Image (cartoon, rainbow, N blue to C red; front, side, top):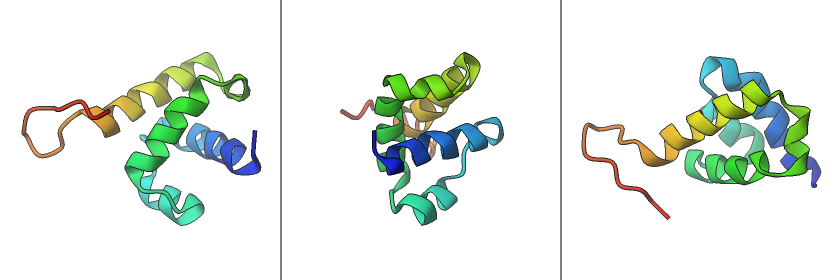
Length: 81
């Protein structure tokens, strides 16, 4: 696990109760919202995610799902691969 990946998990854990912080994630990691959440989903399935509580992992999975798969403009959701 790289220091950046650990940083992503720690960052996500801190911001989970507030619904995340996409703007700061871009500043900290240089990742778009979609890139950040795709990477986070992968990391949540890794052994390193044990640093987070089960409820935080569940919260983060829901937040990632909302960012990646739910429409934000009132249109129908389209699941992106």
